[in-house]
Amino acid sequence: MRVRRLKKTPAHLEITAFINLIVVLVPFLLSTAVFTRLAVLDLALPAQSSDAIAKLDADKPLKLEIVIRPGSLEVGDRHGGNLLPIGDRIPDVASGPDTRALAVLIQAIKTKFPQHDDATVLAEPNTSYEKLVKVMDAVRGGHQAQDGKSVHVDYFPNISIGDAPIVQSAAAPTGPVALAAARKP
Image (cartoon, rainbow, N blue to C red; front, top):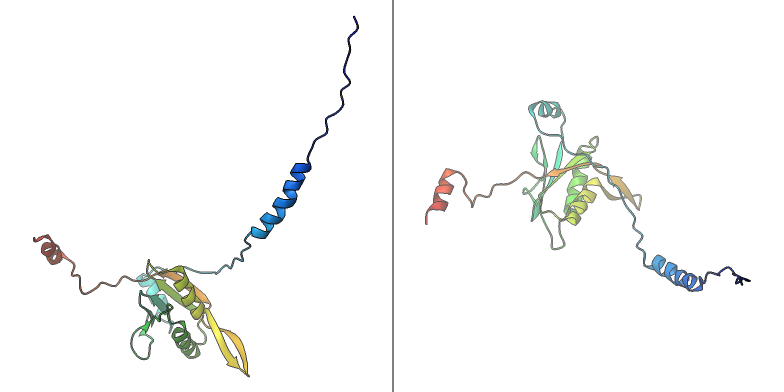
């Protein structure tokens, strides 16, 4: 008996629809992609306080600290106290921290201590990222007019960040007397 075999022809792949999809999809994905520019800030954590470290830092005339509080900025020296000429805080403006007043003060401090490049920015836990960056930018550098041109000047480029010291409010007493008063009905 004779067996009839069919001639098999190789199947052709139909990729026209796939190519059309790729032609449309690739420009769409490229046009909607978000290209970001990352900036890296070199930061150092402040040294922990101990008696040995305090004795090493005592011979330095300036240890600049900027403390970010909810309604103000406190600029001070860890060894010498407050650096503000009038008052003890720079109050915030409607848009956030008063970085212009801070920049003027930082510029005056830099002219008094030109050899120092270190500063510490201490923030409370609920401080927003934008507020922290604005303060760090004002401390790091600014623009000065020299020979009719605006020139960028570094004030304190070496910034350490850390947690602000907790301020006890006078309205809420603490201790055993406060606990006894709170338990009374």
